[in-house]
Length: 104
Image (tube, rainbow, N blue to C red):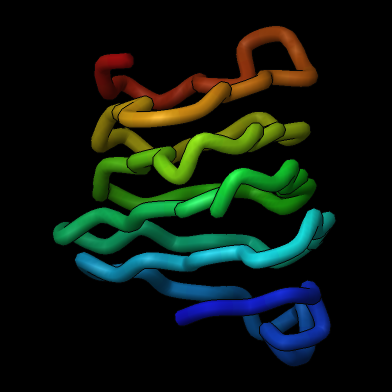
C-alpha cells in the first residue's frame, strides 16, 4: 500500500494489520494508527522521507524498515518478532521503545 498522508489510512481507531505486507510513504507523515504485525511481519518503506508513528506496534511479526528515510517510533512497542533495518534510520523517541523479545 502506498500513501502520501496519514488520512489515506482511514480512521485511526481502526488500526492497520501487516502480514507480509509493505506500507510505502511518499511524503513525510505522522500517524497515530496502531499497527499489528502478523506472523508474516511487515515493512515500512519510508521512501526517502521522514515518518513518525505515534501508535503502538504489536503482534508476533518482524518489523522491517527500508526506503532510505527516517522512521521515528514514539511509543512503547510490544511486537516480539524483531526489527530489521535494511536502508535508512530508525529513531526511538522514548526509553525502552522496543520492549518486545525480538532481536534488532
